[in-house]
Every structure is written in structure tokens, then in C-alpha cells.
Figure 1 (cartoon, helix red, strand yellow):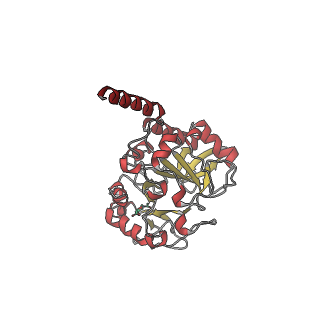
Figure 2 (tube, protein in one colour; figure 1 turned 90 degrees about the vertical axis):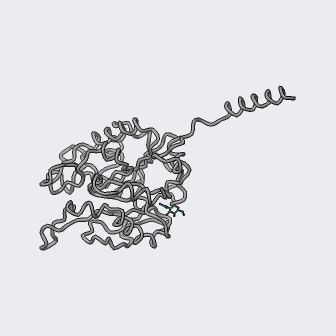
Amino acid sequence: MMHLFFLAAILSIGLSVSAAPAKRASVCNGHAELCNRGYGNVTFLSSHDSYAISTDILALARVQEVDLAAQLDLGVRMLQAESHMDGDEFKFCHTSCALFDGGLVVDYLKIVKNWLDDNPNEVLTFLFTNPEGLSLTDVWKPAFDEADITDLAYVPPTNPMARDDWPTLGEFIDSGKRVIVFLDYGDDGSVDFILSEFTMLWEPPFDSTDSSFPCSVNRISGPLSTEDHLNMLNHNLDINIIPIGDGVLIPDFAAASKTNSISSILANAYGCSGLAGGVSPNFVMLDFVDIGQGLAAVNLLNGF
Ligand SMILES: *[C@@H]1O[C@H](CO)[C@@H](O)[C@H](O)[C@H]1NC(C)=O
């Protein structure tokens, strides 16, 4: 009996091993708890104008002061960036390439790809803006192809995806499709992994100069209800340095440690939650991500 029992046990172990699915991620974005949590139920630390990097405090159009790899190492899992065509070069620039030239999009993507290769258990979101309506097929996709990111990009089974429809972080990682790409404007559906931002994500007002960040649904589109959209905090404070006419807004560096404090971020999250069906924001977007307590606030919002 004993022997038979062991034989059966060994056989069943053998069977379950051979029938087992491919290795499953046990830690996702740094936390075991996140592997089984849907993308729409996770809060991600996000970097505003992630390419606009300078340590020179006189570079008034800078938004970040540490490089991309450092931002990612700090815990940033959504990178926002603004595209422009500079001559025939496809770049990330702040308002214009004359004001702040963040370099070629493809070079930016290659840096991120290296980081993704070094960090296989991480899910990353891009939120790119396309103010000039540049072509998805002729301009955007070739940059992703050249940086070797296309194979990592997630293609949803339906479009738009409601907040609760998204895979878990573990599913993204196990499938190898762990990069989500949103674009704000000009998405004609021609590239399957480039997703229209506002049909799936609503935003409150941006460029706030009010440190209490009054919340309202400012940009949204499509058939899904507000509560079925993902949502984001534009938790970046500007200061008007020329308060006449339209003024000139720049990131309020002096206020960054206060803006990026746990109390300020949680107050903003609370202020928006009524519009988001009572849940936390999916993205907490900050200027100067290396200053303050952004990741600590995001961890609290995730329940850690
Ligand atoms: C995730 O779900 C929990 C429980 O319902 C909720 O408290 C939290 O706000 C949700 N987070 C997000 C980002 O949806």
C-alpha cells in the first residue's frame, strides 16, 4: 500500500509537472500581491514629461532632474512624453524643440527597452502625446520597431477596454506583452498596439497652478462610462512666472517636495475618487519624481 501510494504520488507529481503551464511570475512590479490584481485596479507612479531632464535649475522648461533609467529605478511605471517633428527628426520636446529638445524618440525607447530587458517582471505604460497628429504607421510604429519594443506591446482583445477588463499584472508578464501604449490624439486605429488614451482613461485638468488640485473630468471620450475608464492624477504643479496675458507656466520646482508629499498626493486622490467610482487613481503623474514621497504614496494607494 505504502509503495503504491508513493508510486501514485510520484506519478501525479510527474503528471502535474508535465501538464503545468509555463513558469508564472511570482513577483510583479515588485509585489507578489500585484500578480493577481487587474491592471485597472493598480496605482502606478508616473513621470510627467519624462524626457525633459536637466539638473540645471535655469533650464526653466525642465520637468525632471534624473535620467530615464533612474526614474524607472525609483519606481516609475508610466512614462509620459510629448512628441514633435524637428525638421525630419522625430523627437520628444517640451512645447517646441527650440525650448527643450529631449532627443530622438527612438533613442528614448531604446533606453527603456534596455531597462525592460534587465527587469523582466515589470509592467510599463507609455502615455505619449501627439500634438502634431503624426502618422501612426509612418512615424510612431517605426520607432517602436527600431527600438525592438513592438514585440513587448500589448494588443487588447477588444477596444476600448473597460477598467475591469484588463489582464492582471501577472498575465501581462507571463505573456511577455507587458508594455501598454496610449496616445492622446491622432489615433486612427491603424496600429493595433497604439491605444487611444481618452476612450480608456480620463484626465482631470492639467497644468494646475492651484496646489489643492480641484478635480473634474476634463478630458474623456468614447462610449464607456467615466467609471469604466482608468483615471490619472495630473499631480504636477505649475507656477506662472509672467502673470500677464496668457502668462508663462513652468513647473514649480520650489514647491516640489510639498507637492510630491504623501499628504498632497492622497488629498488629490481623495478629491478625484468620487468621480472615479470611489477607487484610487491608476496613475499618479509627478514632476521631479526624485523629490518627495511619490512611491510611498503610490504604495499606500495600492494597500502596501
Ligand atoms: C483596487 O480595489 C480596491 C478594493 O476595491 C480599492 O480600494 C482600490 O481603490 C482599487 N484601486 C484602484 C487603482 O482601482
